Length: 303
Image 1 (cartoon, rainbow, N blue to C red):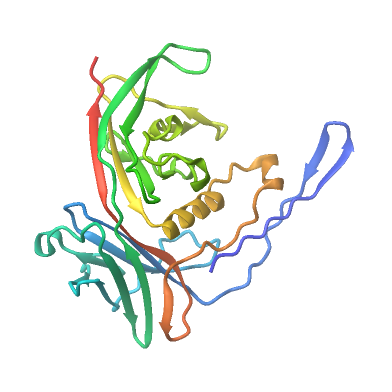
Image 2 (image 1 turned 180 degrees about the horizontal axis):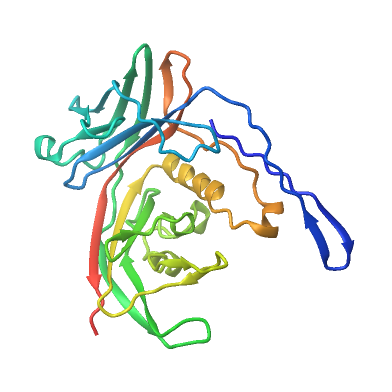
């Protein structure tokens, strides 16, 4: 398990003069915790579940894969989806699309079971509906003191009316996923939260435009890096459960740490919740299981 302890002592000696002492404390060791990465979807592709273990905070090596597990998903009609460990990647368990067909159906519920020796873990998820993407558009922006002339991408979709829906919107620029913590784009219906009352309407502008990438300058500040002619944008909307929506919001809070003075007032680091439960044994577990329906669209900027 990872621990982070940060000490910062600031002593004002003269106006505008301060100093900061950095120390490297010795962290307590802890038994490894099982990490379950099980985000499945109904795209026509192999489905993957990854099992790894936590490691010491200052260990920068890739996480160790957990081999020899039995991994299976069963839907509420009794259909079984067995996952087989990869020969090349320890701890990666695959469901091959060509043999299983497209995974799952909207409205179906799923049970994940993981058996590792005498330890057993379970999780549950329901595949919710997802709206189609109507179109993707580009808006030209004039050159300013802060950026060159460029084009801002925007996707258009309408949240289905009725029940509460949650989504994870993934943007890709030139085939590369925008996966910085600040680029995680979540929606509750067509807005940011249940209190927004955006049911059954087009997604609000900040969510539609979150598919535009940002880069980091030499001072680690985020700067706009929107689209230029011949760049491509690809957007996927993944339906997620309420538990997954809350999980991802916690991930953003824990990982989107800009540093600097603002960290004095930031939410303290803490473990993120999980929907994986231990049904046999005493081994601890973190991670998440979600089953998503996906709609997608792409466009290349041509002038």
